[in-house]
Length: 178
Length: 178
Length: 178
Image 1 (cartoon, rainbow over the protein chains, first blue to last red):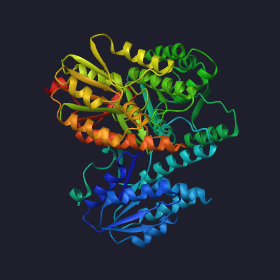
Image 2: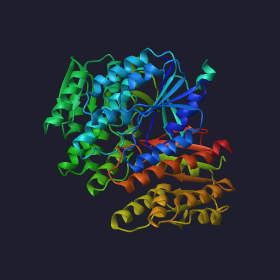
Image 3: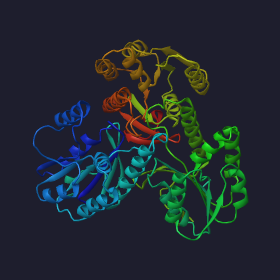
Image 4: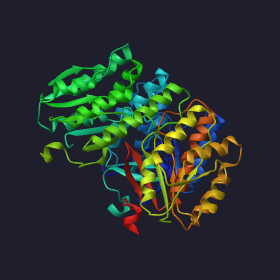
C-alpha cells in the first residue's frame, strides 16, 4: 500500500500544499480529483485559491460523490490528489447515502490502485463537543473515516503550520523511495 | 511512573482502541473504569459501541465521580483503562464540585498505584474560541487537567487517524518493557 | 533564522509555559511582548494568571497592534516572548486593518532580528467548520499566518498536554545550541 498516502491536519494548516508537493515527487502526470462543489461565492473563492496554488499542469476531475468510480477511471493516468475526503463525506451524508457503504467502496478501490493516490482530509474532532447532533454525527463519521483510510495507507502525515509529522511510513518523499 | 499512560486525541481519533491494545500488552486481567453515564439514547449508543469494540474479558467498574476511590479499590486487580477523563471532568463540573480539588485526589492516587493505569482523554482546545463562557471554562479546565496528568504519567501518546505520536516516554508497548 | 521559534498548540495545552522555559534557556534578559487587551473581567483573569505563571524578572511591553514596531524597539534588549499571535491577529482584524499587510511587516521584522524571539500561537482549525462567516475568516487567517511564521522560524514546536513535538529544527533547548 505504499502507493496510498493520507495527509491530515486542521483548516489552513498547509495540508493541500504539502500533498501537492508530495505528489509531484512521484514524477508522474498530475491528476486532481476535486470533491468540492461551488454552492456559494465563499466556496467559489476557496476553489479558485486552491487552483492558483496548484498552478498549471494538472488534469482536473470533478467528482463530489462517486469517488470510487473516479479512482478507477483515473488509475494509470498519473499520480492523483483527492482534495478532500471530509468534503466528500459531507457530500455523501448530505445526499443521504449510506456513508459507511460508500467508504467501503472507496477503500476497496484504494487497495487495488496501481498508480499513486494522495488523499487530503481534515482533523475536525479537536474542539469542544458541537451543540448540533448533525455536527456530532459528521465529526464522528470523519474520525472513523480517517482511521479506516489510514489503515490502508502506506504513509500518513499530520500537517501543522505547513510542516509534516509522520504518523505512519517513511517521512521521505516518494521519489527517493522509488 | 511507568505504570501510568495518558492517551489523548480528538473525537473518534482511535484513542480508546489504541488504549485497549496498549493495556492488553501488560498481560494482566483487564479492568474498565467507565466514567460515562447513559443520560440519553445517543450516549447509550456510544457506550454500547465502545463495549462491542472492547470485546469480552473485561471487568467493568462504573464511576462517574469518585475516580480516586475507583483507582484505589481496583489497584492490584489488573491493568485498568479509564475512559475517559474529559467526561469525568464534565461530570465533576456538572455536579458543581471543585474540579481542581478532585483532580488533586486523582493525581495523588495515580502516584501510588501498583498496577498499571491507562487514561484516555480528549483534545478539546483545537477549535475556535467557543461562544459560551461555560464551554470556555470547560475547555480551559480540560487542557489544564491534561497537562497535570501528563506530568505524572510515564507515557503520553497523541493519537490521530488511529496512529500514535509519542509525546513522552517510550513508543514501545508495555509488554516489551517488562 | 535560528533566533526565531514558533510555539503552537490548542488552548491550555501548556504553550506559554513551554515558551517561557525555552526563552529562559537563552540566558538573556527576558522581555514579554503582550498582545492582549483587558476588555473584560475574564480576560483580566487570564492575563493575571499568565503573569503569576511567568514570575518576576520580565520586562513587559504591551502592544496589541504594532507588533512590528515592538519587535524593532526591543531588539537588543533581550530574549522576547510574543504572547500571542492569534490574539494579535484578532486585534488587527477587529481594528479593520489589512491583516495580510500587517503580517508582512511582522515577517520582515522577524527576518532582521538580532536577538531571539519566541512567538506563541494557537491551533484554531481542528474543530468542525464554524457556523459564523467571521469565525471561518479568522480561522483561515490564523492558519495562513501560522504557516507564514513557521516558514521564517528556525524552530517550530507543537505542544499538547504540556509536552512538545518538534515540527522544525532541533528539539534541543537554545542554550545547548549556543
